[in-house]
Length: 216
Image (cartoon, rainbow, N blue to C red):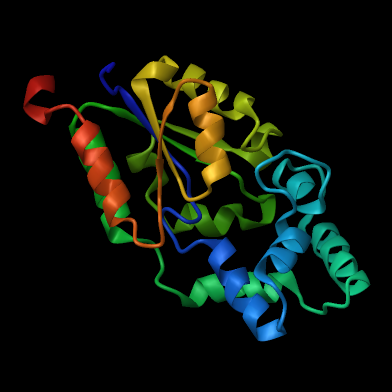
């Protein structure tokens, strides 16, 4: 096994609660199957398509246009909900997970480079950037809405690795979505799936990191 020199972190579902879980809860309130609601909001998330949310994450359309398109899709299927009102519930949740931030800090102390690789939205950027000391935690930030490429497109991992100056075999990626983990593994990056409780994933990462004493 090659030594780890860089760790790539997703944002939503890793540093915060997963937006997918918020919509699963909302589906129960709507009396709809979770997969039905998730498909309307996020589309086939293990693929890169022309679904409104995918176009939003690639920075091709704005949040308002994506919201309207998603609501129209849902209404045609007999569902009425505002995806932005549901997403707003994240703001009242647990906030940024301190144990994940501590894990990034430990990763850097171990001598590894770090990157944030996130499918995100232009209109959300100021909010999530304000929630973390981004410059202190990450050597590289790859935001899908800035680079025009979103997970699971392999190119987003290649972009991060190129900016880090690290080969895929020396990198690890943490994400809460299995399809994104599979995409990273497809380019040779080791993947760690983050569950609602991030503890096991963080323990798996810690076991892979080099001994900080060895990097002095």
